[in-house]
Length: 612
Image (cartoon, rainbow, N blue to C red):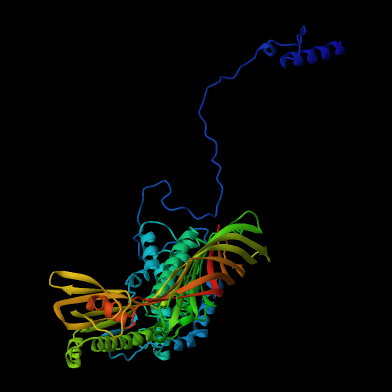
């Protein structure tokens, strides 16, 4: 009985759990057959939101409307932006630029400008003049403030930005003015003795470095390219404007960069992490593709000398007697580059270079004195010729000669022999670690040259000559030569045969005047093929930015041309005396010299690079 009751209990339990169907005994109750189903009601429920902590600084106005930033006195600090250390802002790249200016400062003694010029009709300075450099020096701060006002978030908030910029400009001003009025270097145009270093260039490079730190390092490297390109152009214009020597510009650029780095470093100590909105973008990659702008010094073309052996033509011996050698020596050249290359891997790539090389001619303005002496010599020749071939009293000829040239002025339009070159080729890179690399290149391209130029500007009375043709045996003849004789009905061409003699019967003013300006003396070079190579050392101090020092070698075979045209005004002042000049052995055409020369250029410089 006990066994049956146990079996019934087990079966009842299995039935209650739906395991199987069994027959219950008297010990199983009805409640075991009741199955209660819970009521099912649909309900909306929420799950906990998953959140992730990030240290990336938030983008400004993301997804919102444009909003300018005009909170000049409100301090802001974004989370996750770490404080800068003192040395984080120091590259010291300005030091070698400043020292390079000192190294070549003594070469300016080779420029013998006439600082004490007392001749009102002679300008011994270049006529190139632009006022753009007075404005481009402020490009950097204008861009930085404009971006900031436009709501583009940079490295610093307004208080920290203004403090860093103010500190940078104060340090620069102290350096520049302290040196200017201690060194007392004369400007190239002889205006004032405060040439070294260049304040415009220093100001421009301070602004460029502020733009670089605020937006180039944190946003896009092309902000830095724009800032430093305009700063470099400002320095070049200061040289072309004859306001500064090359050494002034190099030292000014070095002071500008170094002052800004010091200004930002000192503010890093004062502000620490306060007022920081973005950190520098750090993402090192092994591809060495780059774009760079650079500045350097060049040597190679020391001088050119043109003598009678280089004349393209010389009609007779008297031409050679008139010509003295023209010797043109050159100062150390200034070189500005824009260069870029795309690398297929870490070692080899293709690219190109644009280069401007400006070589200032030493004492080019001394040829103005030659022009003044030429005018006196030519006037003497005219007097001698007319006196020889006329019956007019010498006193009357001299009287008319005094008004043949009443005003003369000379100007050095260009004292720079400037070469523009464009080259393409292969670029090579050898990594020396994470930050250093050696580089080289093989380039081929073309060069174009802008000439040296001295202009002459004459005014005076136009003189009229009347001829008398005689047929006299035994007198010198002008075999087969044709002359133009003015008559009452116009001009008549008359052949001068053997036994004929031509005399000047009248020489007097026509009552009209002439005003003529022309190229008195020019020198330039032809377009030529250029071959280049070089070695460089690159230091990558940020993820997208590097500094490079380089030594380049360039070779070209050029033909230089010098044109000397002292007689041009005679064709207007005495238009119908050309026949007599020819008889007297004086040729009014310009003299042209040509000299072929293999030119070897060496350039030492530094460049600022953007890696991409």
